[in-house]
Figure (cartoon, rainbow, N blue to C red):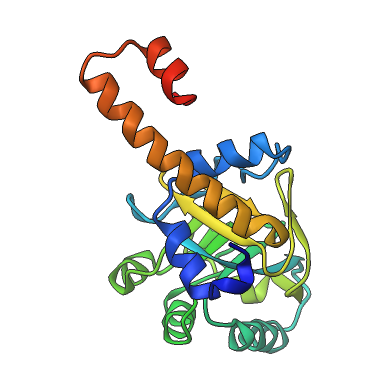
Length: 222
């Protein structure tokens, strides 16, 4: 199977059913050892899961920026977010909220699958009502438009040790967030599904009394 035989939407749906631990195991085995985003990025709601294509956003603090200029840049970026995307921000900012209720309302409307913010979020109660998955660093009521500048979007960014390109797959669950390079995404998907299937067999064997080492030697997984 290659990516060409699957739609992006189908790949997103299948990735959303795989836990991130299985995906990182596959990436480690393939030699990709730095694909998990920092653990300080946490879901607004426990149980949140997301899978989609990275739509990266990059900015920095700037207290001299004009409010309307700042706002219009952000609104233009939001208007360009494509279906099946994950809007993923490197804000370089520990003060402001970079996503709120009205932004989420639009992103959900156009088929965006979630957001990951190395920065802040606000309007949390309203976002939770929208059932829109958001992972972020912190929450705050402080608006970014007075104090933050969007420099670029749909461009490569780095969060922690992870280089994220536009179109890479982003998968997140309660364990954390992982970035899968687009070029290997189809292979990672198949191998991850195989791991999940094998681990189901291991789980049953252990529940039936098979010792851990015996289970590993039989199935090659534990």
